[in-house]
Length: 153
Length: 93
Length: 117
Image 1: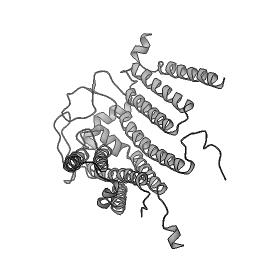
Image 2: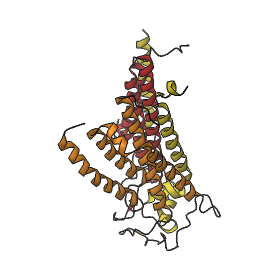
Image 3: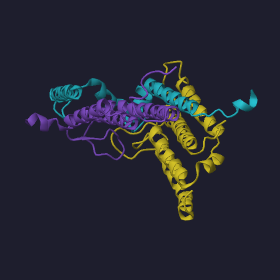
Image 4: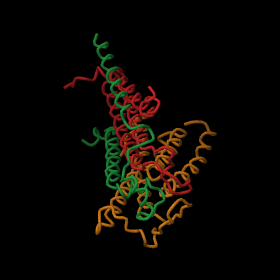
C-alpha cells in the first residue's frame, strides 16, 4: 500500500477515467473507438487502483461473483442481439428506420447525430461490459496469486 | 558449430522475407477493390453509422466479432481456472 | 534500391518479424520468449494496417473529416480482431509460465523439456 497522497489522488482520478472510458464506448458509431477500446481504457483505471491499494483491499470492493455475472450478461446480450433479426438474416440490422435508434444521417461529411446507427450502439455496450469485467478479473487473479496464495472461491 | 549453422539459416530467412516484401504493390497504391468501394459508398445509407470501420466490424462482418468474443471468454475462463490454490481439500476429505 | 525506399513500411514490418524470430530461436529464458512472440504480433499488425493505405487519403469516418478519398476500412477491422486474440493468448502464456515456475523452480526452457512421471 503506497502513501496517503497517492491513495487520495488515485481515488479522485478513477472517476475521470471511468467517465472517459464510458464516453469512448458510447460514441463508437460517430468517432474512432467502440467497445473493445473503451473497455481497455477502464481496465487501465482498475490497474491504477490495484497499484495504489493492496490487492486484498481491492478484492473486497470487486468480488469475483460480481465480475462473473457482469461478463456473462455482456456475452448473453451480444448473442441475443445477433439473433434478433433472424427473420431475414443472422446479423440483420433491424432498427434502421424505427424511431429508437434509427435516423439515417445525411450523406457526406458533417457533424453526427447520436440517435443513429441501429443495433451498433447496443452491441458496443455489450462488448464493452464483457471486456471490462473479463480483463479486470484476470489482472486481479494474477495479483492475488502472486501476493499471498489466497483461496479464491 | 550448431550456432553458426543456425545463424546462417536465420540470415537466409530474413533476406527471403525482405526480398518477398519488395515484390508487393508500391506503398499507397493498392489494387482496386470493389468490396471496399461498395462499403465506403453505402455504409451511411444502409446501416446509418458515420463510422465505416464500426459498421464493418459489427454489421457487415459481425460473425467474426462473435467468434472473437468467444475467444476472449474462453481465455478468461482458462486463466481463472489455472490460478486456483486448493486449500480446502485437507479439511473436507 | 529506390524500391526499398518506396516500400519502406513493409520492409520495417518484415524486419520486426525477423528480429523476433532471432529471439524465439536463440534465447533460453521463458520471459524473453514471451516478449519475442508479442513483438512478432506487433509486426504482423503493422503489416496489415500498412497494406490498406491510399495516397492522400483520409480516415474512413464521415464525422468532421474533409471530403476526399478514404483509405480501405476492411484491413483495420481485421487488425482489431487480431489484437484482441493476441491479448488472450498472451494472458494464457503468462499463466502457464507462473505454474511452470511454481512447480520446477527455474525459468530455463532447457530444464523443463522432458515429461517427468
